[in-house]
Length: 75
Image (cartoon, rainbow, N blue to C red; front, side, top):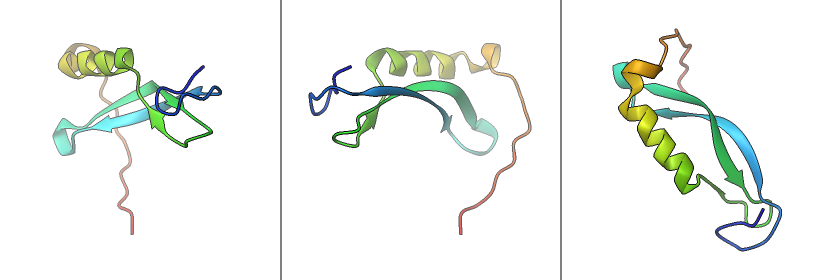
């Protein structure tokens, strides 16, 4: 795949967890595809992925499951 930022080939798709909000409004989305370029070092979400993330955030009450999660502060 070609990097949208530097134009070089070799971009890889990774899957990560992303968190949005905080406290009671915290939403964690697992399996978010992120494009990573080994040449320029940038990681980015595609337009399609951004639209899907926004859809999930809007419909969180109907599709998200509640799970306890451990939280630690850095430092």
